[in-house]
Length: 364
Image 1 (cartoon, rainbow, N blue to C red):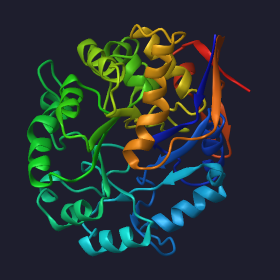
Image 2 (image 1 turned 180 degrees about the vertical axis):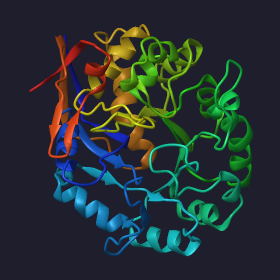
Image 3 (image 1 turned 60 degrees about the horizontal axis):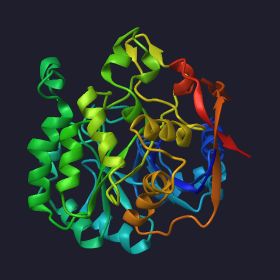
Image 4 (image 1 turned 90 degrees about the vertical axis):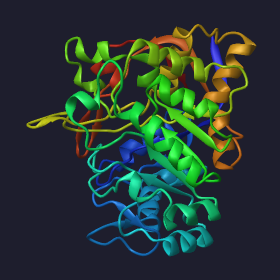
């Protein structure tokens, strides 16, 4: 069985900075990716819209140029969000929107994930001039939806976790204060978040990663499989079931592909574990496996339409650009992903780290 699909857009991924960037971009191009939303939590962060890179931060203009020079010129679309910091102003938003450089902004909970120490609490942004300017200018807010500064028991237990608290305590207030703000709830992991997005206005959508559709907390803990450690962490069976239901609902328009692929040359560190799963080169295959595990027959016209909607169509429609006119193919056949060798070091893809043999492979 061979599936022919429009090339897809990874609307949440990490290309980092430095000598390995060409390898990371190529891994995306090699898996039929027509474009990307490249995360701004680089070192230093993408904290300005225009101008040359400086010691304390890239600009969208300068970081985009670096990515294009590393191979991203081949993409049909490249979006670099502005990292929201205490130095972000409403005037910056308006000028960036008018220039065409600014299309999205990224909210990071302070110290909530990799290189997020420049972020600010959501409570400091709700009702403020920055979000109002984004609302007026049609700039998308990309959200890492976890409540920050929680104790261990509050961070995750059987009843609630950092994500469920964010979507029950912060998101309703955000929508009430900014009812026209376009929002992407990135890498959602819980039933609470999936139901919130499904019931929200049409201008609220969500990305879901391959790992959160495939795995649960049990997979992570059993044997401490650190290549599966990402933030937000994988959750429970009922959460995975809710995510699968969201992406396989006929006609759904709110949920789309965003891998959060995050390469690390050193995964296990002296102080813990680097957060992020690397799925460059294999994301469509993993998504196909997840759809099949959810009971979708990808060999049927109905099943193929469901998969195409999630992978290739919904994301471009939400961000307001056309689906790709080009196509790629994956085939139902066993394959394995090798370690990615880069000038900065070796990166282990998630399937190899999990001892997983892919049941789909790229064609061509």
